[in-house]
Amino acid sequence: MSASQVRVAVLGATGRMGRAVTRLAHEGGMKVVCAIGASDEGRDAGELAGVGTLGVPVVKHVSAIAHSGADVVVDFSTPAALAEASVVCAKSKIALVSGTTGLNENALAALADAHNLCAVLWEPNMSVGVHVLSMLVKRAVSALGPSFDIELVETHHRAKVDAPSGTAIRLAEVAREARGGEFVYGREGRPGPRRSEEIGVHAVRGGDVIGDHTVFLFGEGERIELTHRASSRDLFAHGALRAARWLAGRPAGRYTLAEVISSS
Ligand SMILES: NC(=O)C1=CN([C@@H]2O[C@H](COP(=O)(O)OP(=O)(O)OC[C@H]3O[C@@H](n4cnc5c(N)ncnc54)[C@H](OP(=O)(O)O)[C@@H]3O)[C@@H](O)[C@H]2O)C=CC1
Ligand SMILES: O=C(O)C1=N[C@H](C(=O)O)C[C@H](O)C1
Image 1 (spheres, rainbow, N blue to C red):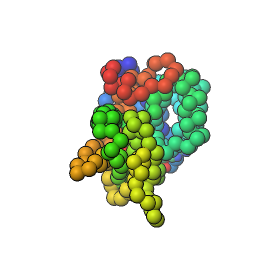
Image 2: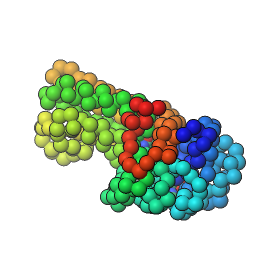
Image 3: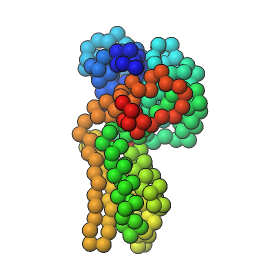
């Protein structure tokens, strides 16, 4: 769909990502028709996002999506809110783009059910740069072979509630698919010498870091470090809105950012 035709419901509209999504959707000519947040009920979503009054008051209930006229929901919220939205989108046949991380079994099951009834795209990282990073990781891990040790370090702002980041888990999965292995989350005590099959995953939290990911590949006498650093949340919001434009109107199914990038 062209941007001006797409009607968007923003789930998590009062949050860091949701405000960026609302602002960039509006600036990009999309119509924000619904805004959901746990607080700030009744406040205008455009004012919260710094783009002036949009006439879209924040509502608390995810069920509002059903009657909003939205073509697509863009979600950056919590696993519980995403689980609820998956059910509403599935029933109402509304497309769902979600970047929420730290998903529990309930949210994963709700998303999996929704794939059968509406178009769903869930990605732990909506940036094109991280998409390319994961291709580089796959290639480097395969080329270097088992003599190189794989460790991942992610760094995020102090307010992040899940660890390790969804992106770090995805990158670790990419490495494991390339050559097998076993995830080790942090180390403490006396774990003994590192085993070659370990894929170490480590989370650092502090300040206002938007999101850094480094994949270390340690060999004898050399190492490779593949790093992505986000310096603005806008890149994630842009990626999610690009996906939303692409996904709106598509048949039920599970879609990926890779498909969006390769075809739009
Ligand atoms: N895939 C990607 O590219 C990215 C993913 N993320 C992920 O997105 C998620 C949100 O991140 P961020 O914006 O920083 O977090 P925030 O805490 O700033 O925002 C969370 C939003 O969810 C809302 N919310 C919480 N509970 C409910 C509920 N029960 N019903 C409706 N809304 C609810 C909050 O409302 P209120 O503020 O009113 O309490 C808020 O609007 C995280 O999982 C994060 O990891 C983040 C960046 C990029
Ligand atoms: O919570 C965040 O901020 C981010 N979360 C995502 C994740 O968990 O991977 C993506 C990004 O790094 C920012």
